[in-house]
Image (cartoon, rainbow, N blue to C red; front, side, top):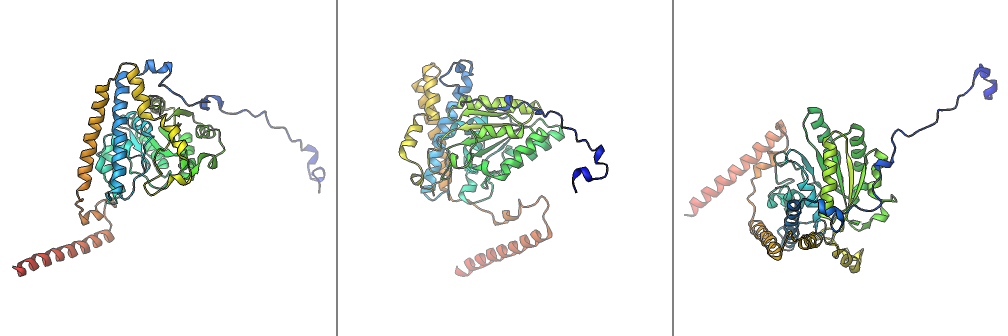
Length: 386
């Protein structure tokens, strides 16, 4: 039966749809064609000298922190360490741009960001030492647990930020992720949720060139990762991830925008992972030394230091002071990490639920009985030996 043969066909007059127009003009959401830079450009004249000096001190400390943590893995004091050498500008800027009331959601590579935010370096490395899932109180420091599964911290950041806004709290969440994490479903879900609800979140993608051994070209065909923002209805920003001043400015703009209630921003920081993925990785299998050497010329520490020296904001004495402060931090970290940790078995039950279940209470009681029996045996054995 054709349409013409249907009952009432004569009255059937389909009307054409109205002309479709995009709800939002995508142009303002598009990132710049080139990564935004401050150092070496006219924009540096507007940068706060005190901020530049603080960024420099933190970069120097961060570089030494990465070197010391890497050495600790070779000494058997850390089980694994994913170095952020070469990415210090992203790490430091992400920490310094936040207010005390804000939250940082790091990935496993972002221990330096946590330390730059004020976390004890030993507590930041506790997970990588294998002692605890998290070596610090997230609520006390406003730093979420270091996240090993790729991108799962992103929906958590959105949920916290959305909940804070519903409560009327003036809080912004900054979530960090690598380029490999943008291939995960959690990345899509977080950005979609954040954009729809205009959650006060900033997403910082550290594009360091490789998701372990997979280059970016094999992960996405997008012009840049920042371009992905347009599909979710949020601005995308592209920044030179080795330019600490530029990263701080771009993130600062995004944080201010989120705090004003204007929603999330996706920031792609183009940087490079100078070291291997972790100490267990052989990076020579998937990249050549000449590539690494080329990126050394764009080292974030040298870029900022050269700018400060040329502008007369820093002299060689200041450079040495920053290095000496970094060495003191490294020495203290080394000494404390060389001491065996004192672990309390009953802590196994302390941070599972806010209120312990009957099963946990029973397990805790059983362990306590075993520990008491062991202690009693040791004491009586010592007395018998006398």
